[in-house]
Length: 568
Ligand code: PEP
Ligand code: MG
Image (cartoon, rainbow, N blue to C red):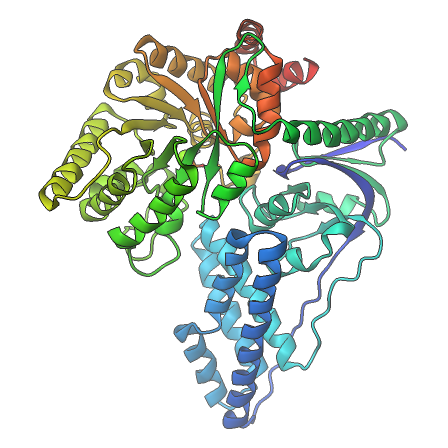
């Protein structure tokens, strides 16, 4: 039998080999019963909701231990569905019509989830999956069924149409070598949880999962998003070796992670961590982060029904600075909009939210909210190395308006006689093509650039980063993106400014020599990838890397760049 290759989205890196095992889950479907006693049914529902809350609470505790506090928050959102007044009112209305509680709950949650999906927003669509997850839990309790733990005895490559967060964390992680999922993009919950568990995953495979026969031997490359079915001996040996080398390299890299990344010709490169929640700071330091190169502050602003106060923000930022001591911290002001709506802000429905009011554009439309963040940052950064960064900047006028906002926050703090950071670096993300193309004009206005290749790639290749069907286009190693990185890097250096990169590309070890060769001074990435990238940086001299970059820039498409870098 010859090797067959299936392609999906690389959602969690690493290589695994093993037998395919299909997991279908167990979905309850309830029939409608008339003439049920509303009082009895309401009490049954009440008891089931209570038990459901307890189960979810236990699951969250278990997830905190196995995948981390931030990821466990997914289950807090589950708990909230169980007290949602609109949803419960709808269920009660049906129960009042003497319909059984199970059917009423099933139908109300189904309608609710369908409404969320109809908006075609990836964030709401993930919430709809969450609701379906919770809905099934309550139905199971109402039916008096025990929670069934997936029974897997031998390590397998788990294949599933989709996985709910509860399912993902209840598997015995020792028995799952990789996940192969039909649904889901790179930012789906399965992807987030798989990464946190350190299990390779490929998502967005669609119907191709049907080709993976039960028990067939499968290689999963979660970094490349590739699956090899019935591999021939040469492919199998090649991947077995790669998996072994990867394991060894990871171990060695971790051992030297706390050392700085000096290139072979002694250039010091700063390697920072991308952090999306305060709890991740400790992990970032454990993995050897020299700095925080991107603190995504959205965690403070999303999934809540009112804005955080200045004081609330201050306390959290201050804790982060204290943990980082004198290491630099790049704090990105809130990047709300696009796929990240905030319920308490008046945000008009947009046909193309990624091209709409997002990031800096939104900040400039909501001065009081923005001022509260800037004041909190300036206060918390006192005595530390504060770097403020603005997202989604597209023009010079925006930079000027943003700087005015910083001045206004400083004036407010002066008037309050508050102590605050006097020395602060101000930078922008380069993630919009206009900003990259005009970087020579923008460089004199700022202290640094940080290139956001996740967005830059989607805008340059016109390929929505949340749409799995066009994911094959959104390749940050495309020469079109590399050429822009060079342009930005040259512009920054010509004006004596430093330039970093904080998109996912920074954490891809394959890309390290080319990014080094393009002249980046700083790389910032998911904490888990720091040790390996530091090790790769030490391996190359800047001259070698420059030659590699020049070669890559001359290639004609992303495939050629991948093949070239893989051959090094
Ligand atoms: C980016 O766009 O590359 C980036 C780092 O920002 P985010 O992924 O948060 O949009
Ligand atoms: Mg971005």
